[in-house]
Every structure is written in structure tokens, then in C-alpha cells.
Amino acid sequence: MVIPGNFMVPLAMFGWIPFVILLFRKFEARQAAAIAFVAGWMFLPVAALNLPGLPDYTKTTAVCAGILAGAYLFDKERFSNFRFSAHDIPMLLWCIAPFFSSVANGLGPYDGLSQTMYQAITWGLPYYIARVYFSDFGSMKLLALAIFIGAVAYIPFCWFELIMSPQLHRLTYGYHQSNFLQTLRDGGGFRPMVYMEHGLMTAMWMVLGVFLGTWLLYCKELPGRLLFVPTRWLLLGLIFTVVMMKSVGAIVLLLIGLAIVYLSQKMKNTVLVVVMLCVPLLYTYTRTTGIWDGKNLSGFVAEKFSATRAQSLQFRFDNETILIDKALSGTFFGWGGYGRSRVYSKSGKDISITDGLWIITLGQNGIYGLVTMFVAIQMPALLFIRRVKPELWSMGAWGAPAVMAIFMGIYMIDNLLNGMINPIYMLFNGGIVGLLVKDDAVVDLSGELQELIQGGERSAAFPITRFISATPQVQSRFIS
Image 1: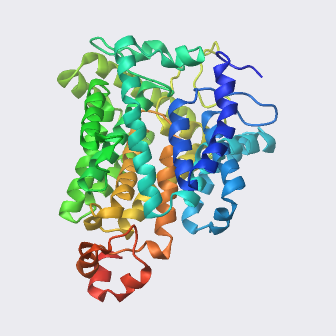
Image 2: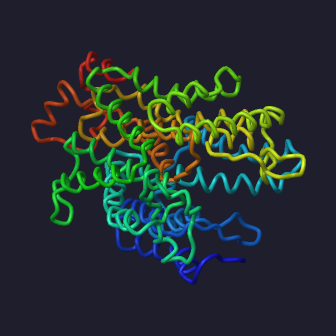
Image 3: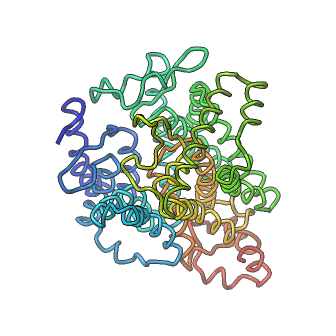
């Protein structure tokens, strides 16, 4: 096994599991799981250690393995409460997509099982952990606060790299986790990476912290202080840091998300969410059918913003075009792995660059993989807006789930141009599905029940008997 970097890489990667077990011994299980996921993703090295006969050992593997080990030792009975639901099927189908791709391309069942195991670790395990640990109001708020605190904790690290250039991963683990040239910004300055794979991933992480913090503050669910510091000041510091990171795309997505969640609950209508969820579908349809080539958009960017950015955008569109042609010439299940979906010159040189997660999926796993990925990522948001009316999104316990559902729509838009896989996002989907498939998750926070809240009986969730006792008019208003 070849281990990159210095001794800190194996120490951190293999030492994380016993560290998480200690967390489970010291903290309540849900707190331990939240800390393990957030801290592990923030600070473990970007590495893929090859273990004989097993999938690559990544930070996702280390985090999930640590949580499962800690849960087995200190919280084993919780797993017996898990019940498979029909809403879990899309994630299952997405996790087994690589198996069909390998078999369809003659790579064999063993390769298919190996690729499926990697897919299940990357996507399925975080989803399953959330179904077990973050599928009620209290735990989803706990996860949201853990992410907000994690983003705040990243502020000094981001400022170090804004000033000194992205060096923390190299200084800690002995190597840069990504191409250093991609950290350089137009007009000077740097894009921080800290301990994540790319600056774009770090920017989206900080944006997520702002999104959660802002909406929880609006819902009056954000604690007044953290370590004697008013959370309002911490949130302002986080917002200022995001602006200084100069990741325009991430900031635009943040503004879109905040606008959608705010306007939807004000208008008491989910049409804006539906439009947001349709954008990736419309994009992939027009690109794969050749209806739209993107030249008008890149021309607009060149005219209104920057010729350099427009050239970069059109370069992405041109690469997508040749990759789409290659993908559609393959099987229904794609080309499989090992670079088979990429485009090569006659001399065998790779002449394609893959950026968006959707085009990578289309090439490797075909139409089957693209459809199952879309459904697995977006179905929980659709389930949420169908079951939970927008009026509730700013009321108490529904604040965190609302942001998580909207953020997954934003994440799918980001996947059109980027391929930054963050397993914490799958916690959102697992939590939303787990929350909404439970009978006691159906809560009305208006009318008669809101009076109970104002009377001092507010809690994370009301029992189903209180909802049943509400008038039929109140029930029909909030539950479709």
C-alpha cells in the first residue's frame, strides 16, 4: 500500500476510527455521530489508500466506519429501529448502478461488486447513518448546528489561506490535495481549500453554514451564544468570509436558496422550489438532445462579466458535447469505470475534461445511472414539499429540514458544472426521508397547536394524537 504524504496521513486516517469510538463513549450517540461526520470531513486528509481486496480507504470510509463501530459498541439497539421504506429504493438503485455498468461492458461481476461497494460507501452509508441517527426534529437541528459550528470553525483556516495561499493540507499532510494553480483567482488572491478536495467544495461548505445559520436565526432556533460569543456576530463573520472567498457561483446559489425558502413560506406556495428542481432536468435534457449548445450563455457572460470566465464556461460546454456523444454511443448502463467513458485522440491521448457530476455519471453509468442519481438526490426534496406546507418552514423544528431540502436542489444545480461529492449532503436526504416516513413526524404548527406552543408547551415534535385531535380543516391545510 502506497501512502501519500507524511506520517500524519495514516495516523489521521486509521486513528479516526478509535477516536470516533471514544466520542461515542463520551457523548450521546447522535452528538457523537454529528461531531464525527463534521469534524472528519473538515480535517481528515484528502487521500485514497489502497487496501488489498477492499475499496479505497477514504475520509468518507473512515468517518462511516468509525460511526458504525461506535454505534455497534455503545448504541447497538438503535439499528433495530430502522425500517426499510419504499422511499429508500432510489438510493438503493443508485448504489447498485456500477454493477450493471460493469456487467454490461464485460468487466465482470467482481468488478461490478467492487464498484458498487465504493458507491455504497460514498453515497449509501451516509444516507443509512442519517436514517438511523438524524431522522427526527431534534437530531436534524443538532446536525444543522454542528455544520454551522463547523463552518464557523473554518473561518480562521480560510483566512490563513486567503492571505498565505492554500498550504494547510501540505503543511499538515505533506502534499497539495489539488492543482495549486486552480486556487489562483482572477485579479489576484487565492481560493481556500483548507482540508477539502477543492476550493469549490470548501466554498459550498461555507455557503451551507451561512444558509443554515441565517435560516435558523430567522426561525429563532439559533442559540444566542456559542462560547460566550453572540451567534449573530459569528454569522456575520461567516458571511464576510464567504464574500471574501470570491466564489461567485457558490454565492449566487446561496442567494437563490435563501430567496426560495423565504419567498416560498411567505407566498405559501412551492412553485419556486419546483422550478429550482426542474432546472437540472431541463439542462441535462437540452444538452443531451443537442437542443442547446451553451454559446448564447457564454456570450452573455463575456459581454456582461468577463471574457476569461466566458471562455472557461464555453470550454466546459465543448467538453460536455464530446463526452455526451461518447456516452450515448455506449450501453444503457454506460461505459463503466477505468476511463472508458472519456474521449481519446487517435494516438490514445485523453482529450476530454470532466467537470459536472451529471456528465461523469452519464458516461460511466449511462442513462440508468443518470436517472437514478437524479431521483436519489431530488426525491427527498419533492417528498418534503409534498408533505410539509411552506407555512411551516419558518416555524420551530421545521427550519432545519426545510433548509436541507432546499439545499439539495441547489446542490443538484451545482452538479451541472462541478462534481464535488460531499457525504454530509446525503445525511440531509436520509434525515428527510426518515423524518417523513414516520407517523409521528406529521406536525401542525398553526391554529390550535400553535396556541399550545405560545402557551409554553413547545417541543421538538408533537405526538400524533395532538394532530389527530386538531380540526379537519387544520389537518387538510397542512397534510396533502
